[in-house]
Image (cartoon, rainbow, N blue to C red; front, side, top):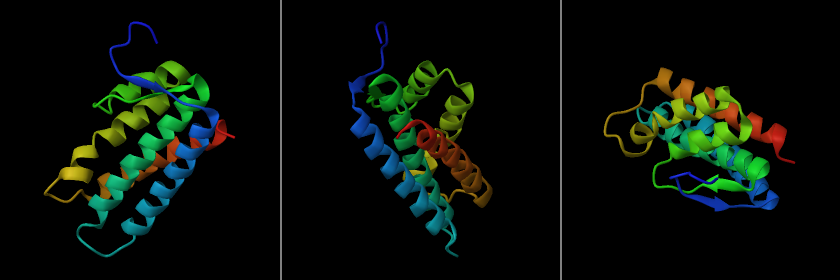
Amino acid sequence: MSGRTSRTAPCTPADARTRLRQARLYLEAAELVQAEDLAEAATVATGNGVLAAIAAADAICCHAAGTRSRGQDHRQAIGLLQEVTGDATLAKALREVLDLKDAGHYGLSNVSASNCTAALRRATTLVEAAGQRVR
């Protein structure tokens, strides 16, 4: 990763499996919360969807390259994900989920149901891709 200004950390195949299990659990929690009939449900579900997407990206990167993004800016993971997979679709899915990170984790206004559904769809794409790669 020479020339890279983002911070990375080494990781192992075991770490990839751990992050995949975490991604699946975050996604499962997101789906359970999304089904709740509360105004805040979409916001909390989106927040968990973001965590699922980040964990899935970590799992993919750990498996493919033995490294994961560890910078303060989660957006640095987008470039690393594309670099190690060559898959612009996965990078785009991560970028679109991360676009909702602030709203899902720190926002005072609730995330819309449609934005939540879109975030969970993209998180699912990443979790499934990690599941196909990480054994």
